[in-house]
Length: 105
Image 1 (cartoon, rainbow, N blue to C red):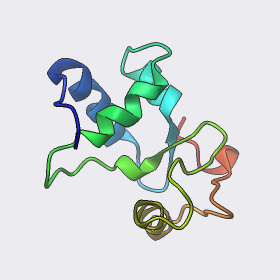
Image 2: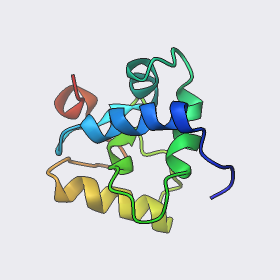
Image 3: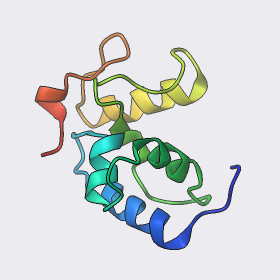
């Protein structure tokens, strides 16, 4: 999907995302900090876009810090993310998740 993975950097990100429990979400910035990447929140989305085919990383648990789904509303990927989150019990209303209820601590 675009650029190749940066093994060390991307692996750290993927490991953090794998650790997010079902029914919880984390922001791009939160994942960046936990992966030791400081304020590189924008890189997190790119790294998740490089996931290899057949992966088991729960990419859909990563959303914007304001609780918003990052994809265009109504797009196929948006609908997939909302469906996966709702299947885990995360409420998505008007494209947003209430972070105080579902944010991974």
